[in-house]
Length: 135
Length: 78
Image 1 (cartoon, rainbow over the protein chains, first blue to last red):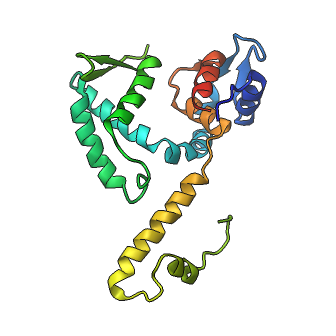
Image 2 (cartoon, rainbow over the protein chains, first blue to last red):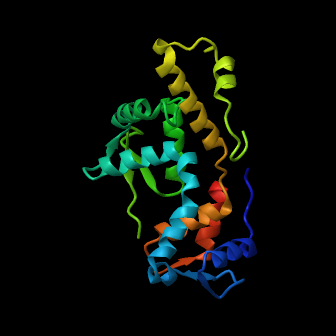
């Protein structure tokens, strides 16, 4: 499903999670994250609501882990990533990846999406990737 | 499958060709059952706007997060 969430709905969810908004209903609205640090239970609450995403985005999560681990030593070779991805796929095939086939094109599609979002940079004629440093 | 609905193991085994389950096939049958339960659990885990927002708030390291950023990223996934 692709639906653009409307700001009032998003604000309602954020307030429901206990957070305060500055300039609510305005385009310049900002969420104050101090509430997160006030009590460990607030963090646990966020973790509890985030957990369902783990099952859905596990392949992307595994791939992201491999990239982050590899990127510590410079650009990551896509070929190496695919080899390590196959090992991880083999490891989880009876738990999560039984109906998830791993092919290079699928891997490249995910990385192209991340590149489009400015998270990764594909370098070396499309053979390696670099993680873009967040500000 | 419904929430808290018991699973009739006998029916499951019959449906999957294990009517005369012997010791040799026990491991394969239990593995197949585990995989199908996990699969159903995955399909029953919907991506909700609340879970996306909670994940974004959880992983943001800054003291504040802009609403435009939340809207942009939740639009990508939701």
